[in-house]
Length: 483
Image (cartoon, rainbow, N blue to C red; front, top):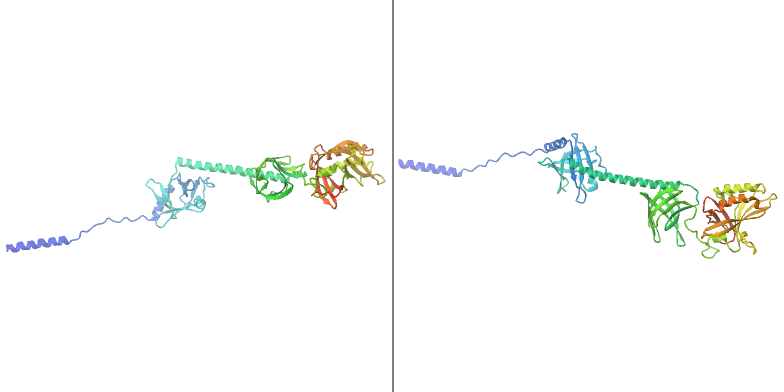
């Protein structure tokens, strides 16, 4: 009985051990924390952003090649945005645009297309949409939401030093704006000077653009189409070009640039406009000068194209110095042969002679140079003679004798030497008043005008006041022509 009891206990112990050995140990895991919904994160971010009444600051560098841009933003409860930045056109507070939140996996902040962010996206390959996370220190990290998120930017509460950085960038922008505004003002000043030049219908005979190393005639200045025409000489060849221009501060830039030998004019810088001339401070590498209305030509006229030896000039034709003499005369068409400014002086002389002669029918100017009959006195070789009629309708010639001097190819000086005839002497004072106008001490330019039939026409243009001119039909010598 004792043995059986012991045996039973042993069996019971073995069974218990076996059961304990087969029992599997159980691990109890902590309860899994549920993620905060994105809409709750976004709401908390918005609450934090709106709560900062002094606004937020971010230093944003869209690319490694661009400079950092200081940006201040104030987020409003109604999703609108106030923004100011160190970037042109956004340097003043912008009260347009809005912000919002989105994202399916992580929270994103989006700025509307009418804000700086869209402009930076276009100008500097920036972005208007960012992944946003809040840091423990209350700042936010922003990364591009388009996959290029290897760089982050810190959005933080704006401090006085931050705003000082912003203001420094804004001051640079304001300086550039002031500079460009001044440049634009100077461009408008240049436009005004050109408009004055084009409208200054003073009536001077010559329109010249003349600087130290270049001279040209100008015409057809169109300040609307922004173009003009120049004519100049290269050696003996006359050239012509039409130039467009753009306004630059204090002047114009030419297109195409003018190239003549070593002269290159790409820009013309202006100075003051006075005395019917626009002063030129510089014209490419050609120096300074003026552009306007002048009493003398920009350069000598072409020499004779027919009937004369090489190098024969209009002054040579007029002075002559050999037979046959020079004989040039006016006809009765007042407007064709006498400039408007000369007509009044001509009329005074006509009135002075009208009591003696029938000046109403014929009253012409005739110029005779080198009228050498073999024994003619030197002071009688050259004359201005007034052709009119007497009471019997006979021709009357009233001579006033002068000396003549060649100064250059087209420039002559005529000096009345006091010589008259018995018939012309009574009108000497009136004739001298006329000759003082026609023959100034500065001299005359002998201008080739055109060819009429077999005759060359010339104009004698005062170099003192080029509004005074008389046109002559050349009778002799014949066959000498100018272009």
